[in-house]
Length: 185
Image 1: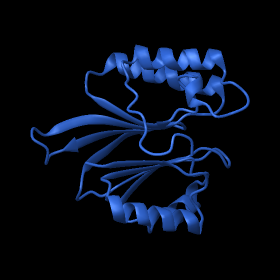
Image 2 (image 1 turned 90 degrees about the horizontal axis):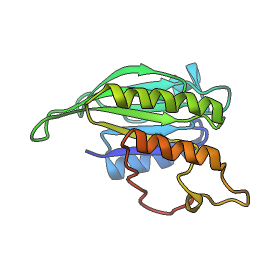
Image 3 (image 1 turned 45 degrees about the vertical axis):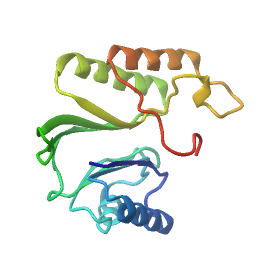
Image 4 (image 1 turned 120 degrees about the vertical axis):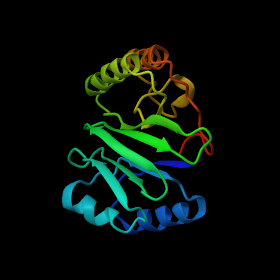
């Protein structure tokens, strides 16, 4: 199974469609998540129609920021949306062609760039981690960093926010799977 997670600011333009089509054709993911789409409602419906998937779930953008699209094909994977918030899409995934078959929770995240709003997400994820024994996978843009080594900027990251983010990962027993490709894009 392949999962594509792509942070693309503004999914309503010709460059996005061309690049997305190329990636889908070359990699054939079972699930595709597009973060920071920056569009909602009818525009999101129209923009997602020709992306090559028969199912899509949205967490709408807030004005011209944020937004999550989760796309999948029903013939490829069984995915049931559990609930959607302004920062997440929670889904139950069943993979029947694996041996043994596996069930897990998939959470697509675009965390708010506003620390206080992000902290609400941290609380929800901590509660979720303590209340569910099922395996879970987070596909995300947390809008936070684990350490200075993840930051390419003249201004250092917020140390308090960084500490709280590290605590979240530790408290939830989450592992960072790292990246494949350029470190800063």
